[in-house]
Amino acid sequence: METTVITKKHSRVDVADALRGFAVLAIILLHSIEHFNFYSFPDTSSQPIWLNFLDKAIWDGLFFTFGGKAYAIFALLFGFSFFIQHDNQRMRGSDFRLRFCWRLLLLFIIGNINACFFTGEILVMYSLVGFVLVATCRLSNRAIIALSALCILQPVCLWQIVMALADPGYVAAGFDTGKYWAATMAVQSGGSFAETVRTNLWEGQLFSLTWAWEHGRIFQTAGLFMTGMLIGRQGWFRREHLHVWGRVLAVALICFFPLHGLNGMLRDYVANPSLLSPLSILVSSLANVCFAAILVCGVLFGYYRSRVAAHALGLLIPYGKLSMTNYVTQGMIGAALYYNWGLLLQLGITPSLLVGMAIFLVQYAFCRIWVGRHSHGPLEYIWRKGTWIW
Picture 1 (cartoon, rainbow, N blue to C red):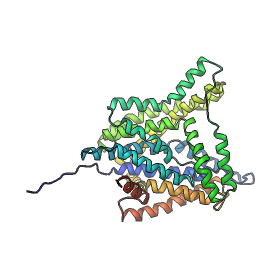
Picture 2: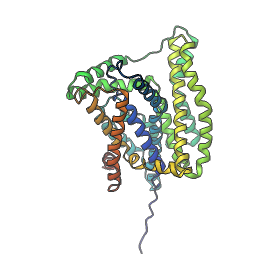
Picture 3: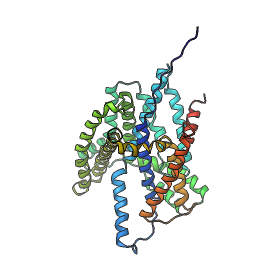
Picture 4: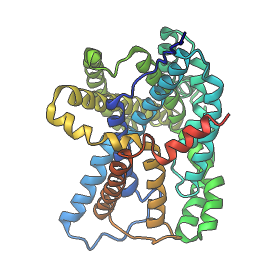
């Protein structure tokens, strides 16, 4: 008698890939106008007024819309992907936690390869913060909601605010990130490729991680990882749960504008730097999370409710399927264009945006060809094969 084995698994969620594509597109545009963490720009004093205006509009507009928000969406989707992988293995009777720890180690290696080129990469941070998913994946929904909310509310900042209010002489301990930043800027300005790699892997990573800690990104990322895992548990990316996102949109809209306005006012009313710094981080972090939620809601409602928007967002699905490959290669391309070991391009903001769009179009064309022939992107395939090597 034949035995039929039924293998259950979650099907791929297209709207999640569209969101990934949207987030990585936003990241490449931001990175391009800031020259991939190398803030070296030509003198614009002789530019026409209209071009200076356009430069400022592009810079302010992109950072208002995507600064701190694109990475928030990326973090949310990282937690969502973990849930899919973990739950697929659970339905097969396997425990994915130990293998995911191995997967995070592989991500750490991939992140350091990326860091050889680009100091602002976030995969190393994800590989470290990702262990929070292993620690919390068996908790109840209520516990995960509480822990993710605590992380998003920036507990370190809350502690520093309380201490600064209680003691006017309180000074929070910090890191000397300036020396790490200076080292990376120096090598990007005049170093060889070998010198850039050596500096990026030490001072560059120390700068990236300490900056993330001091600006609340560590706790925010942990909170968003858990939130993404909860979204997967509840199936909230499916069409039938759009009513949930309607409530999320309402709350996010109500909260964002007061938080954004308050963030712009703090410097005028808070003189104590030990109080101002954690307050600014807390308020700006919450504002960014709210705006990221608005963007996610916009994508979901557009994808499920508008035929035109669904078609446009659907075009981003191949780009989202290769999100890791696109994220890593954009840093390599950008460093080759703007750093001293490469072309050392001196471009203003507007042409830099055009360069970012050109990088996206080249990557997109590759993605369209690749997904027609393969189920995983190049780096995605290597990461997947490495995950199951034992």
